[in-house]
Structure formats: C-alpha cells, structure tokens
Length: 97
Ligand SMILES: [Zn+2]
Image 1 (cartoon, rainbow, N blue to C red):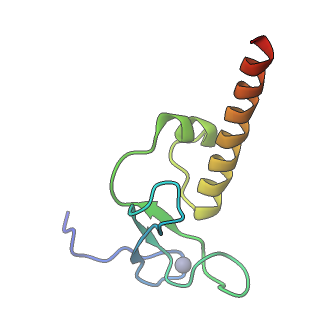
Image 2 (cartoon, rainbow, N blue to C red):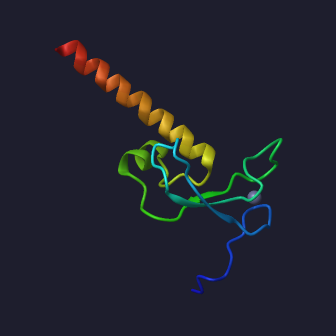
C-alpha cells in the first residue's frame, strides 16, 4: 500500500490533515477530514472524518456501537453520550454516599 496516495472523501476531493485545537478534550490529535467540512450548509461537505494516530478508546467505540465512528458528527455524538453516562454514574455514586 502506497501511503503517499491521497485519500478521497465522498465529495471526490483529497482529504486534508488537521489537528484538534486546544479547546478539544484531546488537543493535538491528528485527523483526516473532508476539506469542505460538515454536511449541509454552509460547508456542504460530506463530513468525512478519521483519526490518524491512536486507536479509539474502548468507551467511545462501545458507545458508537459499530466500531470507530466515521464522521465528526458521530464522534461528537459518542462523546456527548459518554459524558452523559459518566454524569449518571457520578450521580448514582453520590447518592450512595
Ligand atoms: Zn467531502
């Protein structure tokens, strides 16, 4: 496999390499994304998204249910779900104290 060959998203455009910003929960992680961005206006991209470095955490992967989520929306949804579950567990734990 030639790693130099570009990956194309559903828009038939070469994907771009990006890095998560400092406000992200895991800053500095590299990912490939659609150069247009998210689906729908104003970006009109395809929402293509793929981490470039490490494997997904088991928690996020299990929340997604079907392995590693393939779109940025799915990643955010999984992170929200994960956070909600963590809050529920924390509340339950606090009630037992
Ligand atoms: Zn695209």
